[in-house]
Structures are given as C-alpha cells and as structure tokens.
Image 1 (cartoon, rainbow, N blue to C red):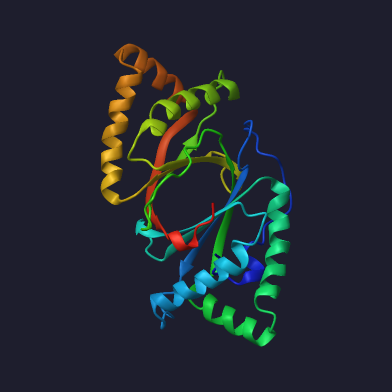
Image 2 (cartoon, one colour):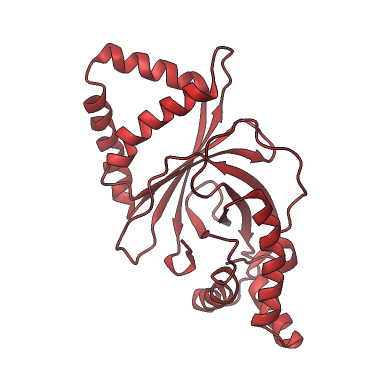
Length: 272
C-alpha cells in the first residue's frame, strides 16, 4: 500500500554499490524502507475512508506485484513523531526493486483505466499524506523468525536502530556465527516474539545502520518478551564467565548507541 504520489513512491536511485557486509541469502534479499508523514492539517476525511482507499490500492497493486514479496504498513505507536508512517517492502534481488516500480505503474493503469477516475482516486488518497518522504534500502540478514500468529488485530512492531562497529580484528564470518547463536537461542525460542527481522545498510545515509525488528501480538508482550529473553540468555549461557565472554565479543560489532521505536502494523495492508 502506497500513500505518496504513485510515480514517486517507489522512485529509487540507480545502482551505486553493493553492501560491503554480505551474507549468504536464502530468503528476501532487500527491503525498501520509506518514511512518510500524515498531513495532519488536511485530514478532513475519516479513518474509515482512508483505510478503504488503502485497501483498494493494496489489492489492486501491491498484492498483484510479483516483485514485492512482502509488504507492511507501520503506524506510530510510541515514537517521537505521531505523524510518521513507514512503508516496508521486501524483494528477492536488487534488480527486482527497479522491476517493481515498472510493474506498479502497469498495475495502476490497469486498476484505474479511466484517467479521470485514476486522478480522482490518487488526489484523495495522497491528500492524507505530506508530499515528502525519505528512502533507505537495507539488506536482510539470514536467521529471521517468520511471523506466525492467528491474531487479526494490529501487531506491535518494535524497531531498534543500532549502529554497527568494525573492530580491526573482526570478520564477517565471526559476526555471522555470533549473531546466529544469539538469535537462535533467544529470539527464536521466545514465545512472546511472533517474528523477527534484521537488516543492515544497503543504500542510504549511514553504512553503520543495523535494524533489529521484533514483532509482538500486543504491547504487554513487549515487556514479557524482554523478561523471557533474559531467562533464555541465562539458560543458553549458564556460566557467567562464558556469558560475559560471548557478549563482549558480540558487542564489539556495535557502537552501543541505539534508538527504539514502537509501531503498530495494519493486518489488512500486509503481504507475506
């Protein structure tokens, strides 16, 4: 589901460079992360009207675009800006990002073949958003926990934006092994976390970006999940010295700085 001017929403720069921190990949390879904003001064419609428009776009375009293999629409819950929304789309390859743009245009034309009706739809749809947005492209790190839930309610999405560090004696292989051991023995075993994602910088303003996404069924599960994670850490590393040694090594790959954001996702606008 896209809420910006449709020719611009998926508009991305051409190939610049490959990420310097590569991982073997057997799932989605890249994710585009579009940060947009509600136009609070122009919202004279209802939430029901916006959701109806969003669903129409989602069904006619996003769901039919074979190059977009996942999509999510995240709305402010506990963040510094209540106007912020994030549109997250996943792709199998870098080339598919560009192919998806062309396919989107085809689907827009097919979904609203009458120009007047098409213009009227997007004038109304886009009116809910400011005509500004920012884009980032991240690369998936293998080892995600696929989202499994029977809930039809909005899911709670905790996004932690961390900074990677590059120790002189560090290696991609070591970080991959440390990260794999951590997520498989904590996050994957945590019943309160219904899904996880990790992304690293692909294209954007800061090559240190490391995005840690944890998905919960409700806000109460966020706190319960944190307590459970502490238990799982002690269960996997029962010896205090061994536990400290592991995290000293693992944390060398991060600067220690991070920012936390809590969003909620809209199930009707989800793909994959």
